Image (tube, rainbow over all chains, first blue to last red; front, side):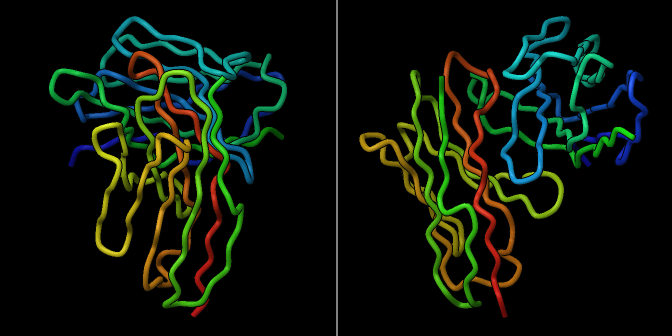
Length: 116
Length: 112
């Protein structure tokens, strides 16, 4: 089945540690995104990538880093510089329609990160 | 800066009622407005409204876009307990594939 997978489902981190969240898609989508969701809040854009080997900062990129070495994969690293990393992290992807990129994003199941 | 405001933030109704969820927005370069349903984890896509498609309907759910007044509504008729969820409104803008701007969501609870 086509879809987006994220791992792990739950992640616990000690202060000062870097952690990497995995996101893989087999939808053949060019664009991939990372969002953060805090309780009672909407999603906020961290980073996005429209094509392999290229990515751009979103609204809240500080303390995060990404890579896009393969079309299928877009891992997110939460660094120790991120002051309040406890949140629900969602990865998404979008494809093209009629040759143009489409805004319809499809989401993975998310990773819940807790800093101890 | 693009902005999305949803109202109400929470709503409790009884099964069988009709509900209307609101989404107003401010945008520099409008491309699309999307509605998602989030039950516990991943948001699932409901509708995308654009300049060429300002009304969408699927079963008991429907949505309209008013580009002049800068708002959208999501209507759910004959509500069921399975409709209980957070409904998110999101804005697509700019040149393309730039990421969406989300509102805080409306938490809808359907009581039996």
